[in-house]
Amino acid sequence: MNEKPILFNTEMVVAILEGRKTQTRRPLKPQPKNTVFFYNTQRRPSTRTALLAEYQSPYFKDDLLYVRETWAHNFYDEDLKKWHYWYKADCPTFPEDAPEGWIFGGNHPDKWRPSIHMPKEAARIWLRVKDVSVQRISAMSDEDAKAEGVLPIATSYKAAFFELWKKLYGWDNTIAWVIEFERIEK
View 1 (tube, rainbow, N blue to C red):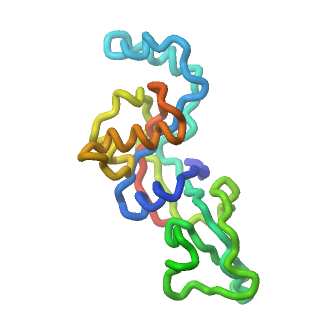
View 2 (view 1 turned 45 degrees about the vertical axis):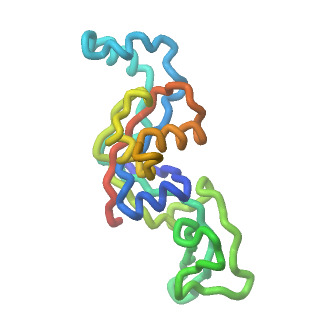
């Protein structure tokens, strides 16, 4: 079991906090050149093993993932010797919708910082990997898309997910790692 970071945009952080998101997909890099065999995995299981042998999964079962999200410094607590943080998922239109009890003043509000720069000690969301698999994006079911945490477009979770995927990665019938997870308390 390892502790690793994983990045999510604000919309997906909200989905995790609301309990709607239990899966994420990340593209295989580089994409396999010969994907004909990929579709034939039911008839030729050894082909799938050979095809994926050159790829190392970024995550494994029971890994602990700390979510990196858009964040800002709130204040430094001298007594506890630690920073307190704000998270954009809690306050997307800061400062108008700041939750009660948020501290302002001094040189605050701090600016939003990108998730990639979030330190581990600022992480408030921890996930345990339950399963890792590989799937072509076009092969996902509507239930899979729902588990991705998207809100449906015209009753279709899959259409909503495809829109999100296109925005993040482009639409090219990508082969992706499927990471199934559960939220845990650290």
